[in-house]
Image: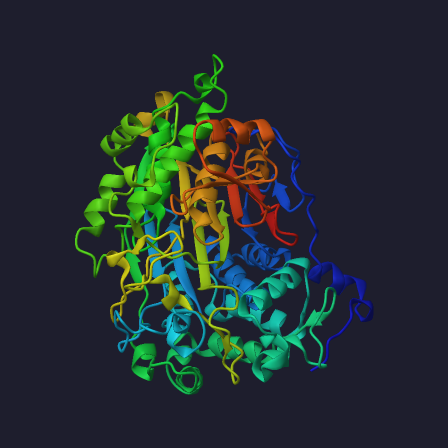
Amino acid sequence: MRAITAATLPQSLLLLLLAVAPSAAAPQPWRPAEQVVLQQGSAAGGRRGAVASESRVCSQIGIDLLAQGGNAVDAFVGTQLCVGVVGMYHSGLGGGGFALIRDGGGAYTVVDYREAAPAAAHQDMYRGNVRGSVQGGLAVGVPGELRGLERAHARFGALPWPAVVRPAARIARHGFAVSEDLVRYMQYGLAMAGWNFLLEDPSWAQDFAPNGTLVKLGDIMTRVRYAETLETVAEHGADVFYNGPIAEATIRHIQKHNGSMTLADMSGYAAIDRAAVNITYRGFRLFSAGVPSSGAVCLSALKTMEGYDDADADAGGRRNLTLHRFDEAMRFAYGARQALGDPAYVEGALALEASLVGAAHAAGVRARIRDDTTQPVENYNPARAYAPDSHGTSHVSAADGAGLAVASTTTVNLLFGSLLVVPETGVVLNDEMNDFSLPGVRNEFGYAPSPANYVRPGKRPLSSITPVIAEYLPSGPAAATASLPRLAAVVGAAGGSRIISATTQVLWRALASAASDAMARAVAEPRFHDQLMPDEVAFEWGFDNATVAAMAARGHHVAWVREGNSAVQGIRVSRDDGAFEAVGETRQRNSAGLTL
């Protein structure tokens, strides 16, 4: 297999394969709904549908499926499968996630296709071998992506299954341009691994170094083995991934690398339908995925902020009081998260989740927030529990003119997952077992792991994934007779533990504005992140010095970080005329939101 240079391709194919690089967001003082220039990678005005993902090529597949008579679920499935081709470092058939779906009648379903622990897994399986939770066969959880996509499509899709799978297979077989994002994540992945597995491991090199050197920016990369896997799935459905030769190849490779997963684990995996959690918030109703995902953490922080008057908060010399309060709301929300876990294994998880999104809890948090200073960690999280981070995630947002919408986030956990790719199928295997807490392994700040997230056979680890769909609450004289609330926004993020903070901030800003480019402005704004542990708040470079100094003056331990640690994909729908605004993450070079 050879790497083709862009110079050898016709212009029409280059236009399909090459993504437009957005300009960086200009540094701005931190405020809600800050006015910024509309970024490239965004589109507005269409009324038939919208798709936002980290790849322009993949977003276009979603738009094409809508144009062929498909709906938002068809667009989501086609787009996500494509992202697994071009963004194999963080998603694909070897991973899993959550999809929040709003059907045409306004009902919500969460499809939980999170990876699960194999039957042989147990609480102490990494004692003396912590590295085994990150690399190799013991790190792999049972993949759930295909079961989740098939379940969502079977219930809500309009086009035939082969029609939504084959576009991704074509991209894998015929090639895609090596993008700035792929080059960057290759560099990060090799640095994290500590060796050049993409070149030195023949299973990886087949795609990444077909001529003996790593592919580079502008080369056309193919994944023929993966294309054949997708083509088989298109023809026969998800069962062929979980039973028969593909499953056998997966298990053989996992067990070769010290894993304990079996064919019974694969064949026994099922996606789960769960109820969505929801709140009312400033004229909207927000829905998200519940445990073992972290939707309640985002909604809890927003419910806390709802009780403040943001317009008056910073008056009278109280500079950046709103930012301080927002950060404190996030600290309380992240602190409560540590007691959450898979509800099938954690008693009281659903009751705790319900309390977190309630008005009484929000009022209690506001009563504990001090406007003059931040507080010691133990004030937010008395149990001193710690849940590990994850890094390799991707989000797709899709919506159509009939009101159907999907927010779905998928992951293989750390970049390039377990560093295992199945030789026969080209499937990159996750290292999702690292998302469980490990007994006796404290983090670098001395906090104990979370017992609610210990490994159990069949259990699904706690996830930072936070898909959110917002709808307008009916108002005025028509409110009493309104039959179906109108879709307002579809948002989600990638970025490990930063998923929650990024999604929360973008929603807070986007819903505060009625501007036609409200989502683009919200996505481009500088972000902060504070997950309580470590005890610091990290600011992107776009924040001004005075803003960060004001936070330090209130006792926050501040740090500066580069842009790009989180990636949001969002859609906004105009209340006036139903026009879509779709926005790809401005911090990624190749993401795109497209409308039809």
